[in-house]
Image 1 (cartoon, rainbow, N blue to C red):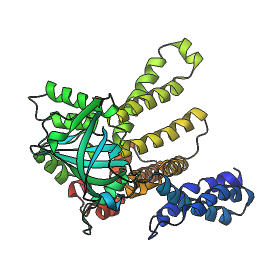
Image 2 (image 1 turned 60 degrees about the horizontal axis):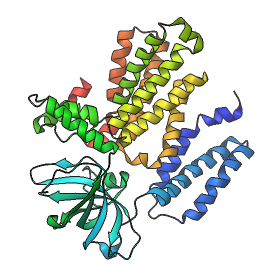
Image 3 (image 1 turned 45 degrees about the vertical axis):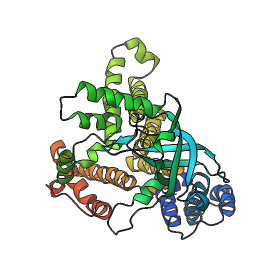
Length: 404
């Protein structure tokens, strides 16, 4: 193993530490210098063979990349001149509207703003009280709205709504004024529109079932139709995370289609001579995972799960398998390169921590040469205890059923 490869397996964790440290800067520094650092630092990493110099370079690169990412892609602040002012905008509904008896809430991408002397455009979250029409994703509207900067309560241990909005690229919230003046400009077939139509179809077919909301949530990621009592049951039993389509769901779909593709391909000897059944199964599994992630709207957790799966798939296809922990660190690095703001999500920390705990448990179990059943029980206990600190930190609670 070369010196570069020995150091490479540490890059994921060191890069994460750099990104995490930069996230605590009180103000955004001048991005120009950090852009230069991103260009210069890789050269230093390759030129200098000293291990500590390379690790410091990776750490600095992590912080510099977060700063540049925020500068380039983070949602822009709402200009003060339109804060709490009624403005006329045109744009597109960019999410499945969340409806109740009083209002419909949805994400709205503004691409035109009348009578506004600023070039600001962006994604906002709007509430439309008592709309006169059925709202669908993909509709283009001209609306009069009033906006305010995205914010939420900062109570210790409570849900950080402002962070959640920032993570989703939403820079302001507001509501529709003068509903009668709203004009429907047209409709486009978007991914979210197809998800909404699928949700409506499922609820129509299962109109007499009390579990239709659960099926819609597991199929499209739209959780608004789950009954309140069902939420309470899942909250008390520690199973509420099952309703958020993430790594578990994507992994199950991948595994199912991996096995299906492998067994079907092996039925033909001629096909196996053309390409191995395992290679085809990997590709089939990835395609199925991508389709399922699309049905869930390519939410942030599904994107992260897809990246991790692709890293594993590439290692399988390239026949360059190293240890599972090395693959995990590579996936960690790729996720952070694609989206360093992932560190703001509790799911990011729980996902990687859970996989790391499982891998460590399996390695130790292999050494002990215990039976498969004992290994399975051991994994459950290790996950429960290993994630207990993070679960308590993020959610200020830990269901006892998870420890039983």
